[in-house]
Image (cartoon, rainbow, N blue to C red; front, side, top):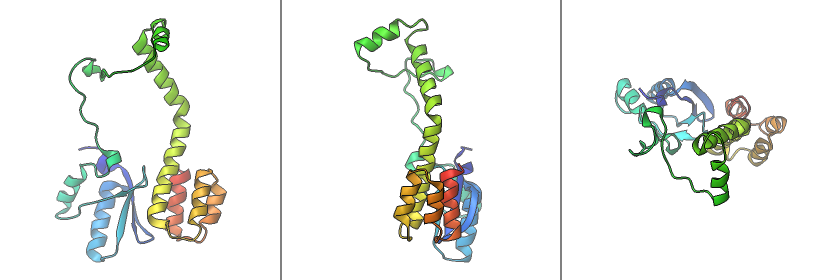
Length: 193
C-alpha cells in the first residue's frame, strides 16, 4: 500500500473540526459523518493545506482501496525514469545539464569529478535552505487552508499579512474572532509543523 492513506489530513464540518490524523482514519470519520448528517465536510491535506477530494461511495474497503491513489496534483507520483544511461539499481538517473563553458571548466578541475561535485553542491544547498523551505511550506499550507475556509472571515487580509510576515502574535491577534477550531488549525499549520 502506498503512503497516501497515511498522510496527515484534517476534516472540517463547516468551521468545526471533525477529525485530524492519517487520511484513512479521516476518510472513515467523514464517511460516518456524511451518513449521519448531510453537512458539508472539507478534507485538507495538512502538508499542503489544500482540499482533498474523497470518493466515499461503496464499502469501507472500497473507499480505502481508492485512497491508495493520489488525489491532488501536488501528490501525483513521478513518472518512472526512462531506461538508458545512469545506474538505475543505485537510483542514479542520467539527465541533461546545461552549463556555460566556464562552469564545465571549473567542474573538470574538481578532484572528485563533475557528477560527484554536483551532487555535493546540491546536498549542501538543500541542507542550507532546509529551514527556510520548511517555513515557506508551512506558510503556504496555512495560507491555502485559510483561503478555503476563512477567506470571508473578518481580519482575513490582516491575518495573511501576519502569516507571511512570520508574526505569530499578529496572527493570533487578527484571528481572535474566528471559530476556535479554524484558528487553532491555522496556527498549527503555520507554526507547529
